[in-house]
Length: 455
Image: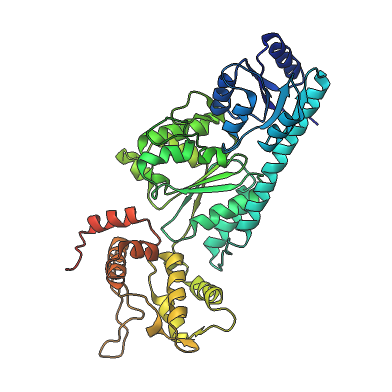
């Protein structure tokens, strides 16, 4: 087996000894950085991620224990080994209480240093693995099943299974509420990657904060940034970063994202040290990115980079065969085994409805129907379907069913948003939750369709 390449910081005020330690550890295959005072050591630890730090206690400007105090609250501090020529029990206890991995007195053998560095690295790896296991266990029950009998949707799931093991970027396209996040979670779960799944909705974060959320920042990068912050790229190391609403990224951040994907490196906001990271990118959008490229709103080179594998989810109105299955699934989820059942006319109404909000809207409709049900059966009149599309075709005078109105998708969306706003008395936060979109997107739709709040 290949020995791990451990990143080690050596902080030793005796220049000759620092050089000897650096050469020895480098000869053992480690990546070593050496400094000769505490302030330089702290600056190096804040600028770059190290696995292990060897800190001499007696150093100019700042001693080793003070450096340890400063870094112990950092997001991902290194394991620290304290070295001193004035070894006392009190000093050892202080170092251990501050979180040091171990304590070593001069004179020492070089072999001891190598063994301690490797053991400290192993402890850091175990700590990371335990955190990942806890994160996986926390997510395990929160991932709902993808229920379908629709052939095109089954083909999508088959594609997901085939490409999950790949490290290639995946772009998931589909209308809001079609299950893009579920597909992203399935891709990560089946990938076998050891790192976590970290997600971000690009439409829900202010543009001024989005770069810092993705790439992190250094202390003093902007007013209020008092300490170092790890970005989502670093938090997702070894795993998957899921970026929903990728179309909402401003062009400047698109350029930085493209470079990070191409080189596997990036700079934190306000930083000068490159950060290397191994992350698989999964993105999602409900907009036509090709059209956005033609209109100048999205970078073509970034689209090619994130679109190595393309997954397109069909809307629920094309999956009418799945509506009863999904309704029963959500009915059990919210009502349990003893909850109400759906009448035949209710199932018929659900299948007749156009579902502009897709599966998310169906879930919300069933949840509300279960909460408001007064008996053991849910009827069509109990379903909060709004008035966007009639539940069933109207009967003409001669008994024949009239054709339903031919509405464009934009008209369906406009009518549905208007109906939801009316139902929640124009509470925009609640309306956005029902629609499954961000308040920012809802505000844009209100302006786009010219809605006016009633007096």
